[in-house]
Image (tube, helix red, strand yellow):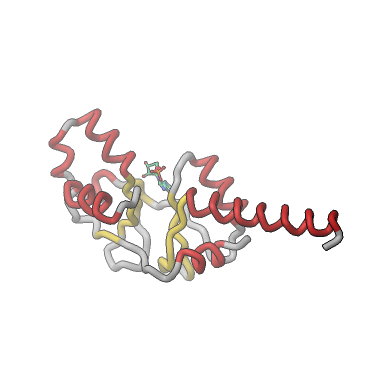
Length: 144
Ligand code: AMP
């Protein structure tokens, strides 16, 4: 399965981005309100400069305490996030996420953001694919 099929199944809800100047306290509110675990950081809403996830905030809180909420996204984000394209396979994306120990991956085309996939999206797509393969194999064996 290709990333473009995963994006299609998610529907075209657009990608939420924040600017590097956004305070971390505001990022925490956005993550909570939108029920998402991470957000792409971009000055122009197109080129991904970084990614900031709930894990970054939790780690910073543990190390630096509540004052870290006054920092900006650019101070806390992971720079140059690993990205994929619509033509990448779900298996390749899953392998990169597992190796890199992260759960979000921006999707880019010509350097511009076109979507984001999470490990949950990829696992869901793979499970659906496996279920269809199972049904097809059962059909072949039973002679339907
Ligand atoms: P996550 O599992 O996505 O919540 O992120 C775990 C850590 O990896 C955090 O420090 C994120 O900033 C970082 N991270 C998340 N996504 C990516 C990515 N696509 N490329 C590089 N780092 C990432």
